[in-house]
Image (tube, rainbow over the protein chains, first blue to last red):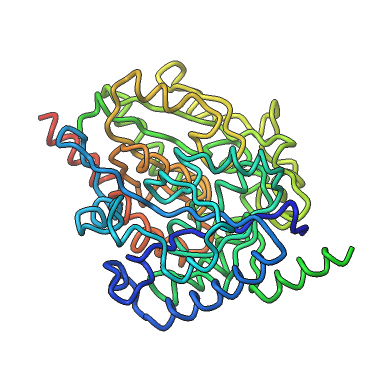
Length: 204
Length: 203
């Protein structure tokens, strides 16, 4: 892993996900898990931004749908119907804690679903910056993190999921994905472990 | 669900996964589950073949592109190492039971990873046929089936997962997907129930 060819993808760092009165905190069984993963993710961002390493944020921002758009079912519609993650609202904005890194984080707009690559310029940006390896932090483990991670693997990137910087709806779901699913297409590691690898590569 | 605007995607029904001496059979602990998924799926295909439902087989053919150094433990790398699903080999071909349908089944090539929509013309084929609903069967639940299902959902299709026609690794994985994950972006139902609904609608 080399800091110059590695990018950190921040998946889902919006107010509605992490802020104390975010609309989507209720979907998770433990706010301790949300807060703990956030603290570690911020610490990781702080360290890698100083290297520097490319950090890309991929928030969901739902665009308004008109009445003629066929309404598909499922969780994305449910979240949209709750009023969460709407473009232009507080809930869709990046969390205040990331303001510290403004200028160091590149935001890719237009994500409308689980997969941060679908309908966005993420792949183009990573290619232009000759990125070979993506490291992923964020939420939720079994949806946006998994969809984004496996697409990255299919597009040819090496992928590392930061096991201590993600959260899912339940602890059981987190363990299932970390133990059974992510290893099928990605590396899994703690933020400490990845920092060690990055710092070792800087010494070379 | 109107069969005329519905497409059945049969994922991974290739010789290396489902034939009696398949290279990948040993990756699934319980041989009976492979056979049961195969039987349920073939029964469903037989029934819907009489209807206007579009049936698509996107065979996976692994290419060098997906071998990467640090993903050496990844399933794609392992598959490549085992010699399974190599382009142009009998193991990569759709199983004979599906080949027997000839032109009734549309074979769409280009799939070389998990997601049947990536690098294939499937999205165009669905649009050309005004498809609104996608039904999914196949292997493996946690990989190609789920990747394809989520993409179909994100593209705006109504997605139905046939719970008795998807092949999982461990049984616990099957339960978690059918009960916890699929319902977030699809309808999870067994093939007999769906056939019953299609029959009632046609009557």
